[in-house]
Length: 402
Image (cartoon, rainbow, N blue to C red; front, side, top):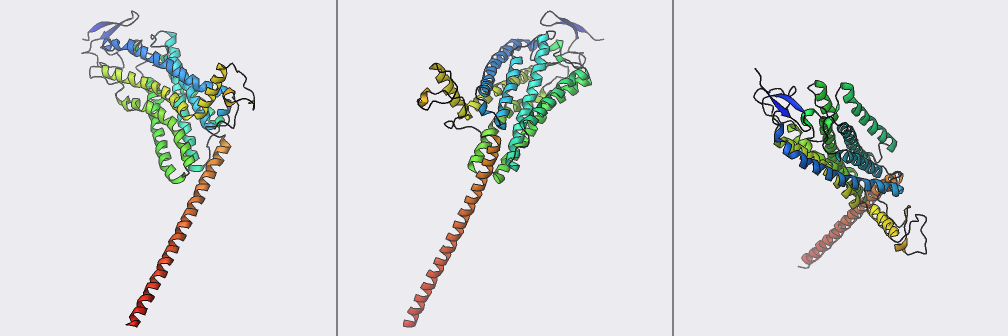
């Protein structure tokens, strides 16, 4: 006969739980040693909230850059995607700033809905920037328009978002894991729950990371054959650094997913698995902060524009109109497209033309160098041949003299 003990959760909720010896079915009963993980809850919660604050600030700075300097984004597909990834990072961090809500708190449901929606959207935007980069490399074109990318991302994300309620799975967390981590899905011992977790988060993440790695390999090997101009390679390296940052922030969690529910035979929870998983999920948020750092490190245009804006505001110059040619450069505040500022990316049509022109110029230069090399080789051979004939002639003359 099974024996039970009383488990008291945060908030005074009491549960009647089978003892460890008798508890063999995790999907019907909670782990009996949850109290072993409780000392870590508060520390992780503070870490998530602090990290989320920094991520929101960083993502907001990228978004504000696009709003204040629209010419940096207009008709520039790569920059547009970078801004959209920052939008997703901002709202994901915003939901994480709620901390670890209780299972019956409406904030828990809100956190789960917001976080899962924008995490998945961020993955899809990252995948699309690799798709566009691969298209540029393989075909010299951009496969998708900005409008079509929005259609793909938000449609796919919305479908994944409404799937759990349709299958009867709730957003939030189970009573057993109340206030222990970020809210995602409320655990239920049903096949539908397993399907939702695999297709909507864990499995989806694994697939996204695998496809990203595939694109990186395709781009790496394709660039060696199809893109030779140094200026074009610079574009590929610059753009690829952003999805690489995202990949590195989520890859450790993917590697660890196989032990996400590392339960002992008696259905106790592995404390090391809990702490490792929670820490790796936190690392993915740190990756979002690194994304912002990469943006401002790579974008000389953003740095210059912000510098001019802040310098102008400091001097009391708020006018963002045309530049006055009589003013010194240090006294100008110019938010418009200025020839003085080198743009990070040209508009898409110009970018594609520049890429094609650079490759053509490289081909012509290489051909010319090859022709010169061949001509020089032939000339050298002829010169050597003439020297040989002269030497033979001298030897013959010397022989005849004897």
